[in-house]
Image (cartoon, rainbow, N blue to C red; front, side, top):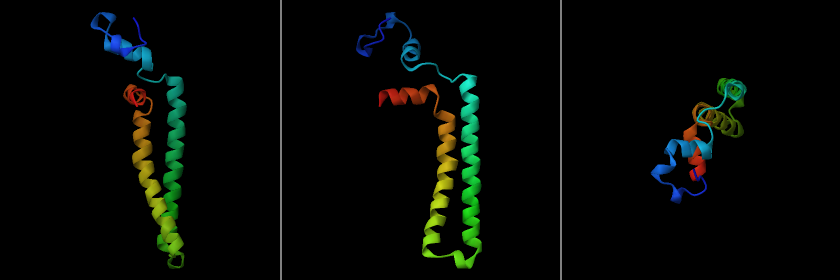
Length: 107
């Protein structure tokens, strides 16, 4: 099967899944990659969420901490928590799947 040119791909060359698997690799990561990645993402998520929550609680509960600079830091902490909750979780689910590799290949 010629995998170098998609324009020359015909039905008699095989299934499109075979072509994509040959070009993009396996659909899922092996377990020896998945467990360390899961651990790293969980640590990043937990420390980020705890640290930003503590920052928000300290700034919100102490009136003398409510300055313009700390208001900016409070907003940064909230934005960082939203990014952690939405962005890291979605990346965790889809970063090493076949669909995202296909998207990276097409872009």
